[in-house]
Length: 474
Image 1 (cartoon, rainbow, N blue to C red):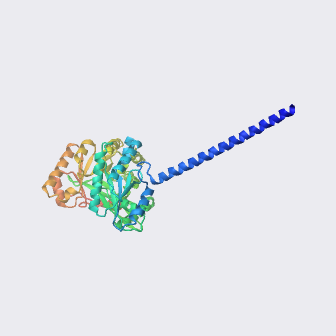
Image 2: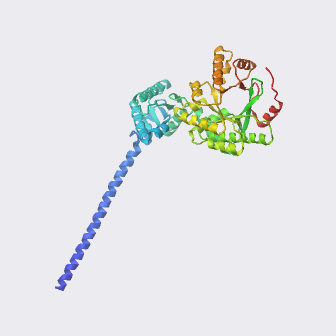
Image 3: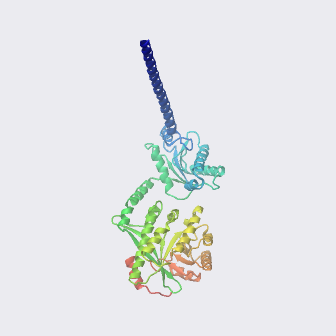
């Protein structure tokens, strides 16, 4: 009996072990099957991801490149054109309405554009708010017209943000079939970034690549030049017409490179406005101005109010004024001796106007004055005077090129009269002739600036000029 019991227990243990083994095998088989399904599903997902854009559900950049090889590279040169569309202000849309609405807008944009794409043409979203279209066209005017129709359709269909959409447009007429899709896309992008006008398509030219190479080189040497003080301060005096005395100075900047020589502001200012470098440069110039004023105080030299240029790029940064105020305190500069100059273009972005208005208030609280440069060329110049508490307007030099024109004189007189009524100083810049000065006196202009009295000059020349300057009657 005891033996039977032992045998029975042994059988139970074997059965139990077999059960455990089968259970383990079943779990392993299940895991293997699940892994296989997961891998297959993952491969399918990656395959879809490789050919489909996750936001627009249209073709991806990879699939776009494949289409390019199949269609464009199998066609004669100048059959296709690569178009780049960069939506203006999309970042603001994302910030105001959220990324979900932003993604929906991109989805809508893609599918509206898709309705304008013919057989054997294709498009894709690049990243964020950029689209590439490969159109079977080679005539620039026809391409521009098609893009205009697309944008009109977009603004008719989509009203989610209650704003019309605008785009920066560039195109490359594909003449070189040895290049791949990426290079063709780069060329269309290069064409787009050369201009600032929206909703107008610019076309790629070979010389643009050389220009980009030069811009890249200047960007690369910027930091070194800044640290080596190769950016030099220049000053141009402002003159009171009432007694022909010095009303103040404007601080300007020149780039004196040891190898490249003098690089003009027309070359580097627009370039650095495309990135954060202009903000660094403005701060550098500002500190140089503060050092000069501090030295004048210590040596008891005659001090003159100085205006410095402030790029609109600063207004995109919260609390940007703190850095300027800190430098002002560091050099113990009295209030109202430094004036910030910014252009009308600073106010063109409606969403930025609140920021600018607040910044002007903070400038006054921090002891700065502010001036509106190139006044009168914008579409809303007078409205700016109503809405923004500026201390000075600088009338754009365009008004004085044909100053003998009676209409020009009427406009100038009108601007100056309005400024006086509002307690705002008016400065005429770009003045070069005695006739201009005589007419400006008749118009009631208080202050002028220009080559008639002095061209911009470095500090050592300025000090000689100031010593020799004698007010004279005209």
